[in-house]
Length: 142
Image 1 (cartoon, one colour):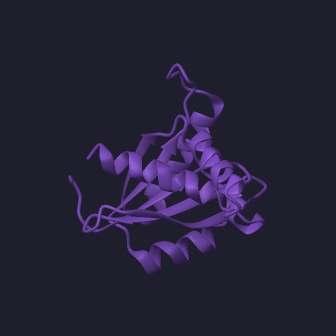
Image 2 (cartoon, helix red, strand yellow):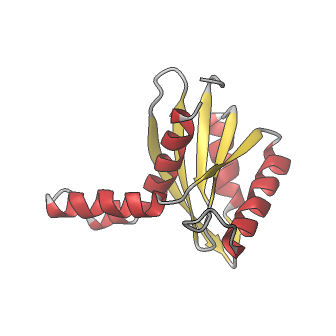
Image 3 (cartoon, rainbow, N blue to C red):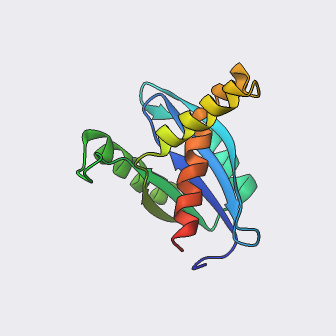
């Protein structure tokens, strides 16, 4: 892989931001948390704590695109968020195509519900699972 150490992935949204963590040594990612946003502003204090605790080498932010690859209003917002993260933490930030990650996360929970494994608390972690899928996709391309 191109990078070593710890990686943090963020699935940006106006109401919530999914967070996942991964590492080069194992090549494994896992959902970490869902941050709430207030009036479109991320919970910077909580994200500050996570960055301080995990000390990632790279932060991967999902880039939402239309199915045909065209940018949307959400793309611009995610790019602005990515720039803010880079400026705030002085850590390398990479954006990664997140098309289909929300659908994949929903499918993951739908299957778990069918098997009786998903609980309401897990369903609330959907955004963190989407961040995990973004990170796994990014890792597979490294």
